[in-house]
Length: 181
Image (cartoon, rainbow, N blue to C red; front, side):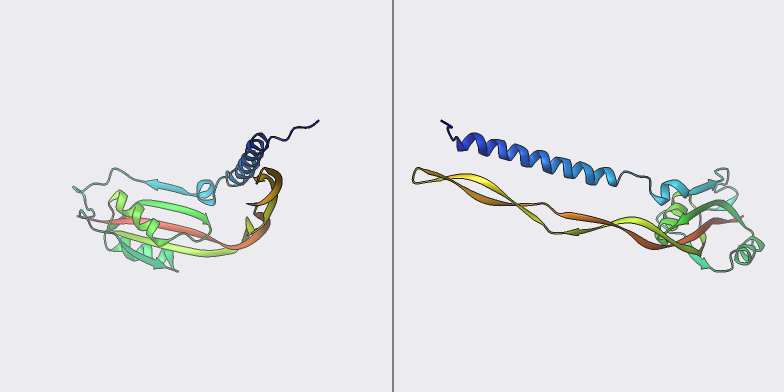
């Protein structure tokens, strides 16, 4: 004769649910583990020999001025003709970066001006996911008035559908400048 022990079955059911949820979470996290555009294509060069003795560096608690340009070489020549020198330069090819990132780099190295250019290259794609709500209904042993029976519990089990998302790719370049004394 089979003896029904709801407490033992319920504990086993909880363990199975935890194992399933752990597996789904591990799969989702492993899909996010690849390198980003930024990690694979960002390059920078900084000349740390420029200091406040030879150039007008950024004042404390100030932010560099940002200049966006479509004519990079011409605008850079305007700056260099006015005794500005290039202290650093960064390159990035990928989705459009926020301008505040270039300003933050300029602030970090102490420059007063940042010249930024972003040229459209092509439409690229990256893997993305669309998530749909889904519930699995699992039997749960219950007891009422000494009678054992099974009820059902809804457990979230979202469905993720991968697809290729189109994104514009830009060639981005920033030059960090200070004026010589």
